[in-house]
Length: 141
Image (cartoon, rainbow, N blue to C red):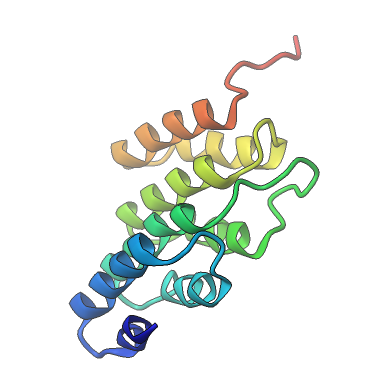
């Protein structure tokens, strides 16, 4: 994966495009690439963080019941829910909806918090994520 070498490039545009490229071309479950993308999710540049978070669902499986958001990938995503940049938070909540376990209380609770975000984009993404997580109605009276 020569493109992964571009993850270290000083230009954020190169790092962002490299993340998008490997997200489209890497094989599902390629942990070498997934780990590099998780590192990019902590990049100093918000555009790079968004790109990395956006492509992770292309390469990873949805978490299975009982894991309670403990996978390394979901831990990386959860950390970005509190990012200072709204676009990064939106990408994180979108990825949580795609990768979190359907019906998982932890994932749903964190997504419900994102509904109250000051950014309309984050709130809208949270609505879609709640639908993907499969439990948008409170069953407890």
